[in-house]
Image (cartoon, rainbow, N blue to C red; front, side):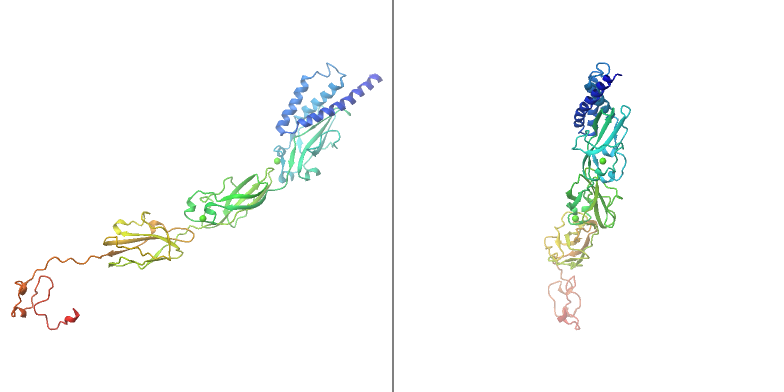
Length: 426
Ligand SMILES: [Ca+2]
Ligand SMILES: [Ca+2]
């Protein structure tokens, strides 16, 4: 190689460097999408260069071709770059950051005498102005201690002065967990209490989560004494009033696991929810008893924890306490049952009463409190009475007055009452 040729080659490499710097910016601009898109772009860069003339055979001394070949080799090497898997979603959360492993692996280096790396802000151009290092970049890079969007810039040295540049896809450093403000208990749980009938319904118990940076919420219904932390198994469905996580009556709460788009997690808790399914038993006083002609009763409903009741009354043969038909609307125990019985015929009457407590649990119809009595408001009906003995002819003579036989067929006085009867007591 002559001196003149050396000078000429040096000028080619110099031209090639400036050329490839210009192209590397184009390549860098292309790689701003997702990791997959960038791999596609990188492949396209390679394909485009294949369409260009072969620098060795067509023009070994064309500086543009030397630069293009270096660009193509760098682009090809970039296709072998494997970013750390937890960078592929485009976000680095606190947990991922606390694992300070290298940010990439697998870069093919055969084509180059040196490859250098730098972690830079995504907004900065990946070019010769960047401070590079030969060390593989790691999550421990001081720059990554700050929230922001970054990328890995790589310098591919073909020779001392012929360098191509390429960058990874950008990734966001985000350590801030979702901030929880409040959540509402709704539907059956709005009053903080699930009673027996509500426990049979499938209604979501939470709504209106307030907070910031929440991209996903998961839930778990637990007894009040439980901790809301990563030990629980959370589900995507809001717990409902018929949740199988309700067991014994008692205090419960709903734990929330909140996550942001980067995967940072925080935990929150709802207000308390009491499960209370105990139903009361109504007691009755003042019900008519035996046989009577009561048509205006005054019956009092009481019982432990009984605040309200429903009732029905009718002929016993037609009144089944276990059937909901004919029960009154609910009323407070302060109101007595004074319903008129005059429209109900004589016979055995029955009253059925079911009580409820202030928590809304009703006494079951098939265990209703009941009472019976006989209503009899009909006077005896007289049809006939036959005279007998001395009165048979309708005349009691003086002689007949001495007789002690009855004057009629049923319990009528005798003609001469015994002297010891005090008629004033009759
Ligand atoms: Ca991630
Ligand atoms: Ca309720």
